[in-house]
Length: 112
Image (cartoon, rainbow, N blue to C red; front, side):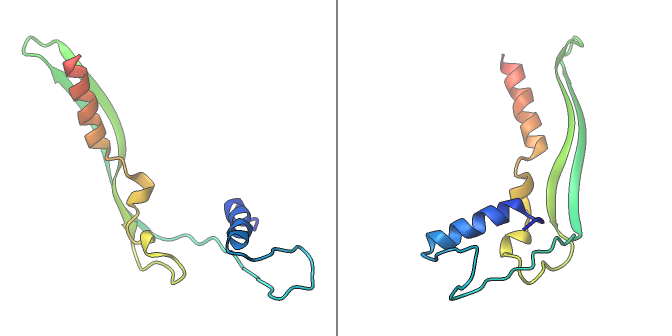
């Protein structure tokens, strides 16, 4: 369980929630052994770096923003067999479009 502390905490809790009794010692009706291994996978990622400046006709700077972020990410190959389908599309990892956030921030600044 040293590979994932979260897994080490959640597994016993989920087993108990499912009606199993979790024991640290023998004898037990069922022995569960898990070899948890970290595995690096190749990720295809589309990222953006932006520098935006909004100026009035007279040259007054109305808003400026710069930054970077991930627009899209997915696994480069097939997910390991044990992984759930959510590893195919990795939107849950980044979920905030950086350009949309920048546009919203600029629009808010212009209306203030």
